[in-house]
Length: 150
Image 1 (spheres, rainbow, N blue to C red):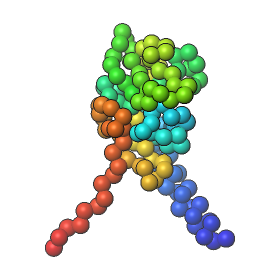
Image 2: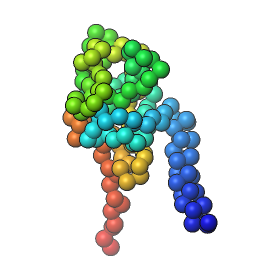
Image 3: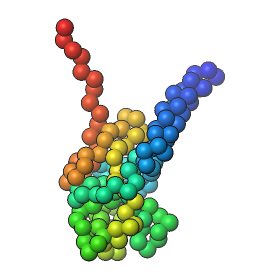
């Protein structure tokens, strides 16, 4: 039974630390539930979103769905459009995909913030490049520590 507890502690403690940090720095945790942002973001990925951060074209953002404001969506900010943002899915072929091609530009106040990192699963954790264009630029894995040669 100890290995199970140790395994749970190993998973829960880092998650708790991430969420505590998220609350202190105006960061929010959001889960990806659909495949409209494949290949960069997959269902089950957990993201950190800097609430209130102004996007630039190419950023991955979280916004409230303009027709269903209780629903959060993860999309790529393509361009500013009439006081709002034109948001698109990276995977236009995804079943059930909904973006600005369907509902037009999303009003600026509905854009919650900019995605800054993926923290779960740990094997795919990394930062999200600011203003990077294209789905291949969605997430940059952390660099391995370099050894100094002495």
